[in-house]
Image (cartoon, one colour):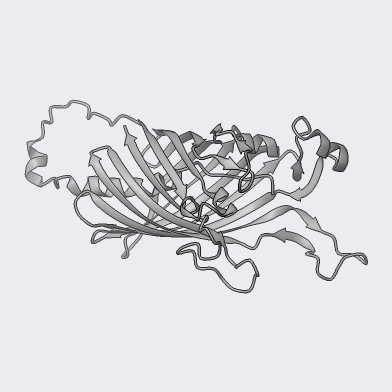
Length: 342
């Protein structure tokens, strides 16, 4: 498929690390006692409100296992390296709601060859990702007796990336719900999300300015359907090893349903998919470490593997602990991040 709804490089790593830094910061705060509360001045002055505006800047570097493959094989062309800068701003509307905006820029750092021994390379492009706008809902309910808190949010994307613009994306609307629990140094989180994409056309359209010959031969419409609905679920575990060091593990699974439907008439093949067309699903697994250097400065490292739910033959489920299917392991990646919040 020509379209890739790519997440910003390093974003998932830093998002996963953020609650771990926050948990470590909360653990270091001294508990307020009745004595200290009574010692605080109270002469009728208005209580100082916290500044409602917050933000973060993060730097990320990512590469995959294929960079270490045999250099005599054409498979090494699948090695990739990239860097990214992501910026986020948040405004606390009240105790429950917050408005968040995020944007980022990524740059390919490795050369992309057309094949083994080929002298043709692609430019190391610097690309802006899609801008995200969201309304976060903090812990709005806590289940009595078990200490599990519920939170969620809604959001939309602005198609500022080249990939989204080329595919004719108008926007993507999403909603999420998560349940979290913490205790004994552990943080557990279970989440689910649903996304709905709006396109100018239901199928991928060629850019005739850059592919005139293809347009003249086959026309503008490739017939390749775009995703309409996407549903995903995730589970993560975090553990505070020592004061400022935390480890985490996460698993995610997702599937999408396409914009087109398959006909079922006398001309339909018995092997054709009729009705609503859906994907075969994908899942990912990751391990991470995060360390808080300063109160609002943290570094993180992560290893992750993403693949389809089934192998290439469609006969067995895959295990995304590592990319055992390909010869180069290109589906397994490593990333490092530096995050500064304010």
